[in-house]
Length: 258
Image 1 (cartoon, rainbow, N blue to C red):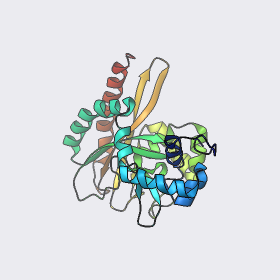
Image 2: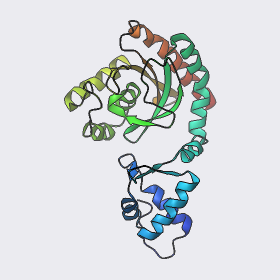
Image 3: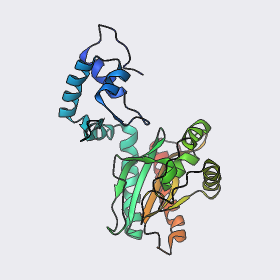
Image 4: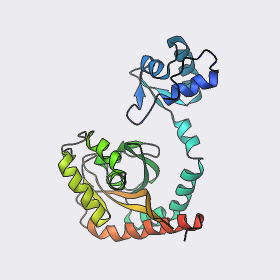
């Protein structure tokens, strides 16, 4: 990890970056002592810098005393060219999709072993929604997550299969069944869940592919959250796929790949 050096010549900036580098996909929340140990920073120095980072908004201190990444870093991250471009390209397609289905539409990318939600358009309030822009949810329990996991490298899939946690009584946590589920996602080109992340909500998601010269690459997942009793869910797949293809074509044009 970048912050592990105890070299006496480290600058304040280097130490602060080392503290932030202690956080990761498997360690989204850490105590003061854990951050100090993982970053190789003296406890008193870590305490002082964490206070400054929290005051600035880079970190949030939870009621239980643990720290997590704050909204300000997420807002800055959205200015990164890749994330900004994806959101800008996807926005009109997502709005059209929302107008058609009237339920929540969201866009996610894979970040380590989680689905990072980069954009969301809210739908009817009767459906419980956990995802927020900037939130990270398990790959195995969400529609967009299953799409992203199905397209991930084998080593990522194996790591995820070793960390299947139950979110509701409907969550799929058996590695063998999850392997078959991912194979089915690859075959049919969409994922569907029913109350696996939260009770009272079903999800449907499709891959957003960038059709490059070397072949298609899944760069994101486009999904919707609907009531589980909605009868026309299967008929929404083509609607999602049309929007996802439109996003992919626009991205290809932006990169002169079409």
